[in-house]
Amino acid sequence: GRSMGSRAAASVIRHLSQEDDDDSFIQGLICLSYPLHQPKLKSKLRDEDLLLIRCPVLFVSGAADEMCEKQLLEGVASQMKAPKKIHWIDKANHGMAVKGRTADDVMEEINVQVFTWLRENTELENK
Image (cartoon, rainbow, N blue to C red; front, side):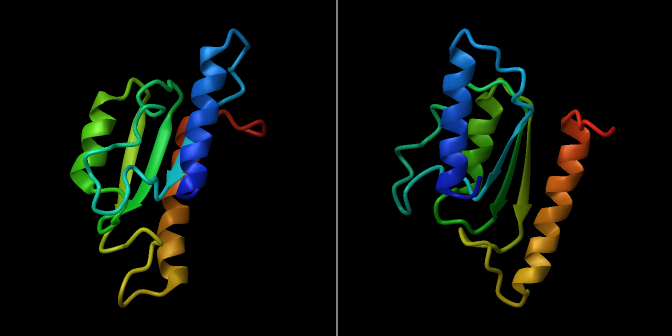
């Protein structure tokens, strides 16, 4: 998911994994621009779901994201039980806009990270 969609996806995964149902179909979580906190309100982190999930997680965030300060996400990631990877898009804001780069160029960087992570962390049916 992207932004609020990644937060919602983390919540769904957390709730599914807490139930007795088989959650083995969940192979991973990709969070693009995860909204860890409100802009300028870094004291209230939205990390509760992240700390409880167990599936592999990829975070792709802008290094200048006003809703996901780099040090805060790295701190949360260090507390997570799940295998995780963070890729920072240099100078990108929450919308992944980077001055001097086209949207397509930034999207290509994101796509490379996502597809590489998928190959490394999921069991593809046609492997």
